[in-house]
Length: 113
Length: 109
Image 1 (cartoon, helix red, strand yellow):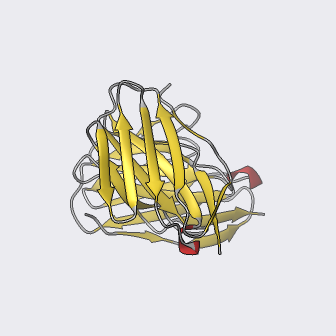
Image 2: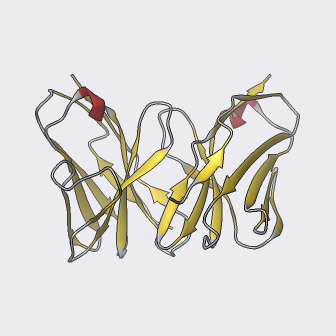
């Protein structure tokens, strides 16, 4: 299993600004995943963060909008840049320590006004 | 495009009944399958995993997998109001977890 500490838990931001979300895992993991969950929707994978290399982004997501850092095997950040109201969502980080089930952080509820 | 399809519901069952949730997946390379429960405002939590064809039982929950039909199901026996949540079906393969849209379940007291 894995325990993930994610922060902030929620934030209200002005459009045009940026927010950085942090995730700390209690064990070393090769990959960390960032998901977005829009209201009433399922989880959509934004990108996979590997330590020591560029993140791999899914179709529809780009590095300029969602830059990711992965400085070590227990930590990652996701930045939501130049925010608009459409970015209002829940953002979740996740790990699969045994390449099986996913464990999630508590989520960050972002509201852009 | 790898997909996991679920009926979004809502599925409404009376307390004590059996709730039946279904999903299909498109990637035949998927190796593992999971059911997550998500309460409103909370992160998903794993309730069942299944890796081989057949049934797997854990308490009131039974997961069923049919790889030939690319079909996964979850049965919840003796449904309780506390089971009311969104249930996400997920497949894992190629180092990625793909989630379905989720089925909203309401258990009426």
